Image 1 (cartoon, helix red, strand yellow):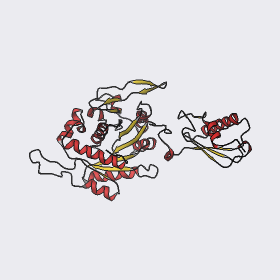
Image 2 (cartoon, rainbow, N blue to C red):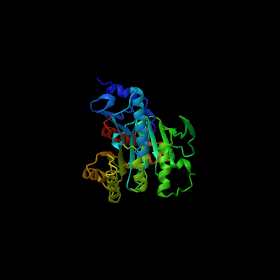
Image 3 (cartoon, helix red, strand yellow):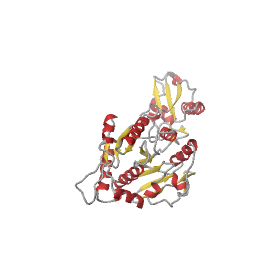
Length: 358
């Protein structure tokens, strides 16, 4: 009987560390064993998955596996060792290279600017934090970073912190939310004029060089549009899904349709968790029984139905929402009122899409 049992092989490989992930390949469940073992492991096939797809990295992993087996069994290795790239859809929290401690990364996007995407992002983050979740918020709107103002931290400057021998950026924490924005790294009156590649590199650092730690949710406030920055970010960030924000008028809906289409591209395949209709209606304080649909009625709901996307709800056009954002205290912080209730309902519908209870 061969001593090359599956358990013995796994024990032998516990000392082989995936270099980019910093854990052993058995703990990361990167080893698959098939076949029946003969002498020296003949007849067995070991498939090992590597986070680095480069040929030289896979060759080093193969050599490390073969060396570990020879040392454990004290004999030449005649089993077949294959090292294959780890596919994107196979990655878990432990095998991610970007944001490994974040459970859900949700992009908030809009095809058109000025529809309230940053307002929705900020209030989603705060409402989730109020439910007890650990939340981060990345303001990736490179040409109009407004999250620092909405969180009353525009004058703050993130500080470096040492983590496992590496220098990281420490996010600013406010209202129970960890926040980073490109706006922290420029003067408030300074225009950020960067070409696509430079902008993409700077934004990537907000994800890869920051000390985010363990989070239940990260909300990413994307720039408006569907350009190069969006594609590079979406391809590198492990998104759980996207939320599309639009106002109900036709000119905004046309761009929102393109936003949904971007996430559904074959090379992206990001789930659209739902659509939000912002500035859906206006109710005057002196006429609470009147509801005015200034930008049209149910436009986003109809578009969501036509695209087979969930409709997460509508947000009213309220002065209190605008005032709260300008004052740096998102409306979701309020204990009562129509604004806070609307955002809480929105979060409840989003959590349902993710299979979570409120």
